[in-house]
Image 1 (cartoon, rainbow, N blue to C red):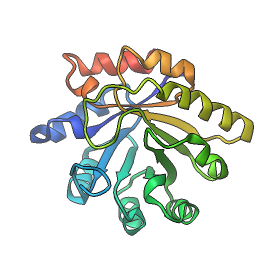
Image 2: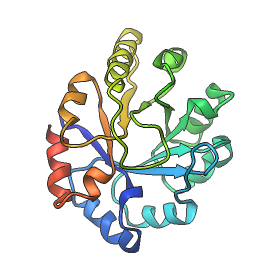
Image 3: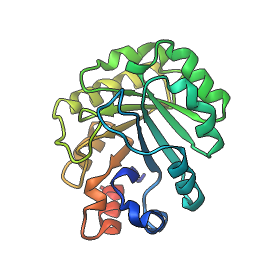
Image 4: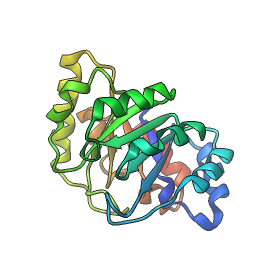
Length: 216
């Protein structure tokens, strides 16, 4: 089975956004990854609903939105109305995580929970049966082009064992420093879905890069 590749639109050329989305539509990628940053939870701003709406108008593949924001509950319904399929919130930003997960599901979306590099995967043990996606950050969130944190591999293996032991069907996604050089190793460790930003959009041949990663 092919790897799930989710190119991060944040690394696209926003002056030619429709062109880049059409390139992804024609590629072997599975999802389009949307990094939503508020400048509070992470030290950077990305884009908001007008851009997501524009992406949704062109995209022919599912949208996978990663909310790096405080108070994510305030925006769940709006992302659902824009057609987002996977909505991922950070465990560090959710005081009442079970309620947030339920709200995402109630809006018809699949629920993901992201973990910062310093956060132990064991904190997801009690919600593994309720979530569809566990996102392991392999860089500190906020900026693209960062170097992969090697300790993330052990976190993936631990998460894979937790999922197997629990009988959950939760997918493992990884985000940060992912590219052609480490995708096969991460797949072997147990990753299902790979977020790739600069490694795709800075490639001389993005379609070839996506194909390599999907089939690694």
